[in-house]
Image (cartoon, rainbow, N blue to C red):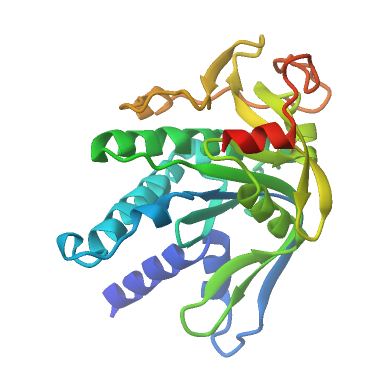
Length: 294
């Protein structure tokens, strides 16, 4: 009986974030009211593999598509493994939708002596995770002789989180912030991380290099000014991790960041040079020009 309880607990903690699972374990089983929580500032990321649909095909030689799904499962599992790193413990995987990976940061409550992190610090963690996802996919491409590409969108703002359903309950987040994050992915460019103006504002003092893309037409929002997150800098303007489209496919050293904490985002009021200004000559990329790169 005790083993069954432990197994059920393990399954529950795999289905739901730890603080949500704990809520249900401590609740009266007869009281199954809707669980929800509102948050004022959450970073939301959508990372898709837009050319996976071209890769998927049902043939006798690949067990009617099963081998294609096996490779997708390996990719998603490697993203999950990356999230297990201690540095990314504040990020919550929300779900996968086809070949799109959805995650968020800023959902875990703070209590006791645990200091509350700034939203800039949370976004920095999410940005680092997105950058490292490219390394993970490059490694899989190298091992499997494929050319999958990643396209990422990030936004920040208020969301409502909750658990829906009595059978196979699903933890999810809702709100305009989520919709715009999804649009940052769908209107983005393959091999790039597109972020909203608000994300850029919060991270511009952090050691990242941004390029202004310009105005992008976003469904339901009209024209939005967006930026490409090009990679990390060393704090002096020199890029140390780049997402350039000409990067070679190869066994990128995931161990390069394993155990090495990336530079953290400074607290508000601390000045750090973050590469070139967004509108420096030669750094402005119009939406039309960016579209040609796709």
